[in-house]
Length: 199
Image (cartoon, rainbow, N blue to C red; front, side, top):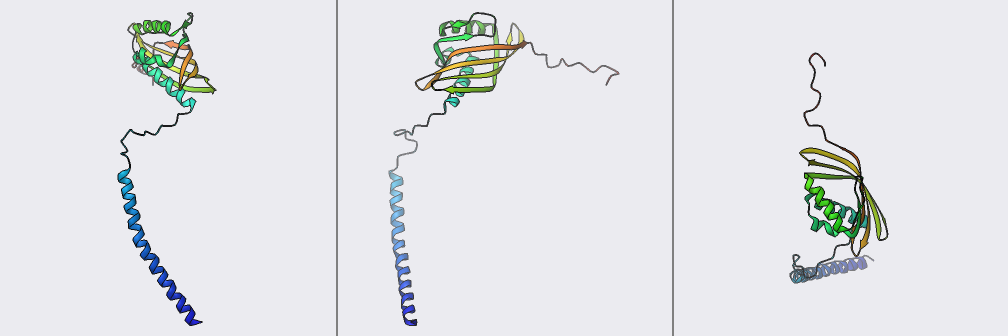
């Protein structure tokens, strides 16, 4: 019995040695094959076969479109702003005036308003977006600070947008803004100075 166990142990050793020798031959050949594949791979900077990125969710695409549109609105770039609006857009301002209907009429009103202000910054907050198929609405609060007639003006309000999806982009079909508060902000040094004799 002992003779059989030693014979099997010897066979096991021979098998392990042969297996290791085989691996020693196979590993370098596999590494060389992988090295050749790396050399044959196209340059990662090559644009021959770009991998298309997945489309963002509709709510994210709408949020981005609103942000980009507002950026162009602030700098007065009507040509870039155009792609975010439907040609028949209806714009209701925060003033007591009729709605502006159509892109061309909106551009005229926008440029007239812009001619009266200097600089300006609009911040958006509390945005909520609801998507329903190829239509959506978004609502947000805004703070608009600008100089008008040599005075700093501050406008706070709400905007609601109705959007439709055209091909792969969202366009604004209705823009309704309501000004909640408009006032001239207090100058920075206008706090009541401490009165003598009072803490």
